[in-house]
Length: 61
Image 1 (spheres, rainbow, N blue to C red):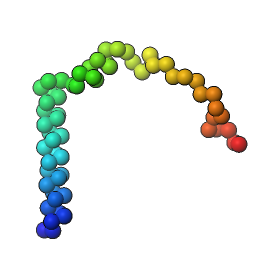
Image 2 (tube, rainbow, N blue to C red):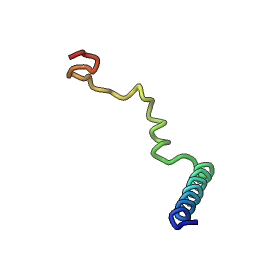
Image 3 (cartoon, rainbow, N blue to C red):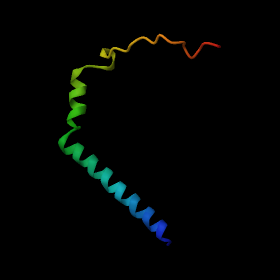
Image 4 (cartoon, helix red, strand yellow):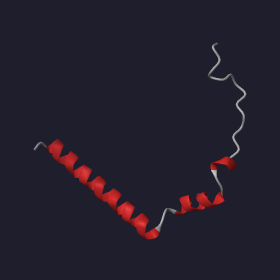
């Protein structure tokens, strides 16, 4: 096995372990605090989006 292939296998394994640990931590502790607070503050409908004054992309010009 070439050194590049070994490195790829090691990195794939490390990524799998990190993702598994993150999943386990979220199951035990819950979602990150920022997500928890954003969920309680309201939905996407509460966000004000300013109107766009420029030409739209559907104009043929």
